[in-house]
Amino acid sequence: MIYMQGINKTQHGHLIAALTQLQQLLAQNGEVKAMQQAAIYQEELESMMAGYERLLAELLTQIIAYREQYDEAKIKFLSVKLKELKKVIPQESLVFFLLKQNIQQAYGT
Image (tube, rainbow, N blue to C red):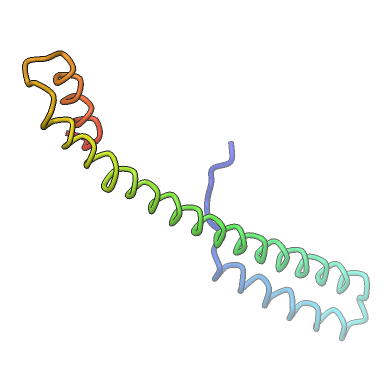
């Protein structure tokens, strides 16, 4: 089973640096095929890291948008409406009991 884990930028940077250095060494020794393979790995890893960072930025945008909508729904709408209802519904009614449960659920109390 694979668990979600972020990509370590430091490890990524070290591997890219090592691949770059390896390419230079392989070029000096005339190992063209191995040098090309190292370049392919480097290019693929860089592309994947760019995609990962793009997705993180997208995720951050989604989290911010969700949080703003959540706060607006809970604070500016739900709490206002629940308070309004609490003032007009008789305390001894079943509806008031349901309202009280709704308030407790909304505020996690």
